[in-house]
Length: 257
Image (cartoon, rainbow, N blue to C red; front, side):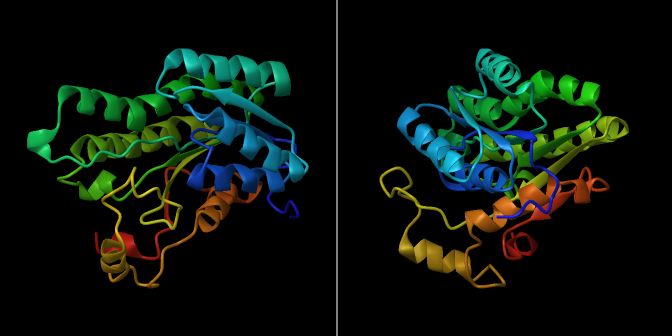
């Protein structure tokens, strides 16, 4: 893949990059000549596999395991990035958990764990990496958000509230960081075509997938690679005038909720 975005030689961190969307984003950066940092919460073999794929594309890679909602983990990411690559130029806050419980079944633990994952993790990443971007006069931040953030969702209230807060965090950071050459944007994936384990996601059935497709104007699920391209564009030199924005990579699904 040729680098037509000007990110060759930059260093990019993608949280939750052991599989699916995060993996596709990280490999998109790797293919465009960036150094990449793979992060996964628990599956080290999976993370190492993605790092090997990135190296096969000619990138330098580093794996840092742990939960991005844990401040100590993010500090380890920062230290490892500085030691290996001299710092971070780009980060994509992608790691997430999904909750499928209505209000009456949602516990305090559900509330706090999902808000931490959807929102607090992105705050920790900003604390760790934005100061270095400011000092270098260049940076790109992408938050993987979702339709739940502005539509709400009865079966996933903590997730929806966290994503709504993430949208406000994006706008707030964009407002103040543009003067330092740092852009901050959201990418909203909708119903992306990822490999799903039906035991882990029993709510995703063939019948439900077909029903979802009726609300997508392009009548198919976008791919992780299509979303990854949007992330790479937002992290490029060409997107320097875009900040505080949302790019919907969901086939128009956002129009119908």
